[in-house]
Amino acid sequence: MKLRYLIALTAALSFSTATFAADEGETLFKKSGCSNCHGISNKLVGPSFKDVAAKYKADAGAQAKLESKVRSGGSGSFGAMPMPPTAKSVSDESIKTIVTWVLSIK
Image (tube, rainbow, N blue to C red; front, top):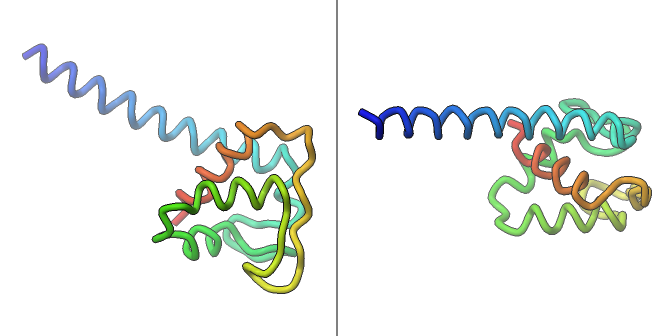
């Protein structure tokens, strides 16, 4: 009986953590200035995050690639418009959270 409660508690905490990470990712996206160029489901200056998630869906190294691209900037992945480097005021941990959230978008 106790094992069932432990399993249920673990499942509930896992769901809560995933929900919190998603909420935090979206909050950081808005706070860090990403929303100036990216929409969640619509293209602005840069691609929509839905398109980014779809493009990198099967790429096992996507998290690290995108963290690096967000920090340093780059071009060529979604056209000729270059992405500028992210401001130093945005922490690496925040970038990691945002990228994790972006890759979870369906």
